[in-house]
Length: 255
Length: 231
Ligand SMILES: Nc1ncnc2c1ncn2[C@@H]1O[C@H](COP(=O)(O)OP(=O)(O)OP(=O)(O)O)[C@@H](O)[C@H]1O
Ligand SMILES: [Mg+2]
Image (cartoon, rainbow over the protein chains, first blue to last red):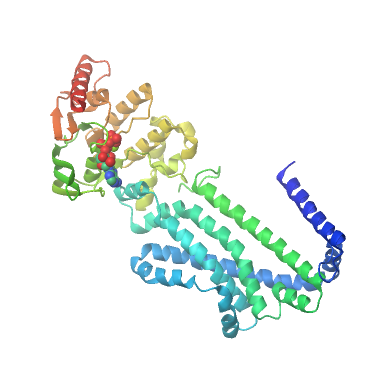
């Protein structure tokens, strides 16, 4: 059986377990709904869920893109400027000691209830893993390659762009994979703290009104999106890594 | 005139070498032999203007060079052509594709020109590295065991190719192979813990045949000297 087959089988297994739990314990449907009930709700309320999902997905994607971009640019900047590195590194590391949960209410206060406070949360939570992984990669370039660039009289920028940057792509890729996992967490936290749209908001609302089936349906959509996002980013990240290690058939520009 | 004379201090009371004097044969080949770990690569790095693990004190006269390190140092994300033309790319110069292709052909890798380093054997990688070094048109060429991974035939061929393409240049070759030094060296030096000693070398500037009497004579001479050092 191929990989897809196993994934489908494993989903069926999980649903079977869930159904068995509901049947065997006789737990009331407002505590734990059966899979079929969640599916019905998913179909019945698909417009509502889709609307809120769209909001959350936008927040996550915009946040991830901005966070990754800013993180990568920060790493490049800290690579070239030792002064910035000494000045900013302690701040960056310290900022990671602040739980993002604690920042969410302030962000809502500053940026309002709309998507931007959530986007900002996602940016905050994705920025650091990208910046720090990429910077490690940029600084960890094989000394031999750098010596080679020196004897070839390469300029600083050429060394950065043609030696350090490609050599650091695998590190950037691992940063991106982490960021893809974190970004939805950031957005959902933001929605829990204060929002009038998004899956996080919908889940809280459904929970409060004892519509557990709706809550589970939203959760299911969120989880599916997160897994998809992670797969797509992993695919891209692995491709970057293979390319940096010369394991792909595609030729790089040899100018 | 490329020259190095001095000491390399590697700790409070540690020296890699205390008194070493080396003058390269201008416009020809200088071969440096010596036991592993004695400091040959370190000398080469000093001449290449690279940092070493110690502090050098003394006189160092050198110039920009083309340097082939002991490791092949091929960039894994570039294919053979990309690696051979790296120098021009790093300097933002125009890339001479024709010359690169010709060199790749001369080192016998035409069929592999678009492969990545990962797909090549150790000896093939070393030849890419050699082609990349030859691509750099510098008057000083520093080679650190450039033929060590090649089979006997390829090694002899590549020695001849390098000798031909580098004619007129000042070349320094670090090697463990006395036969190689005998064929190529216009000046042969052996390095040991006490310093560098000059050894006899061939008289004419042309490369010697591996089986020539003169080659064999020089080779055994070097071998005897190297074995004495070890004792
Ligand atoms: N980066 C480094 N840090 C500390 N010690 C080093 C470093 N590089 C070399 N050494 C030491 O300096 C000595 C000389 O090293 P070097 O590489 O010059 O030897 P070599 O003569 O080229 O040997 P080989 O023939 O094995 O290549 C060795 O004892 C080695 O342990
Ligand atoms: Mg060495």
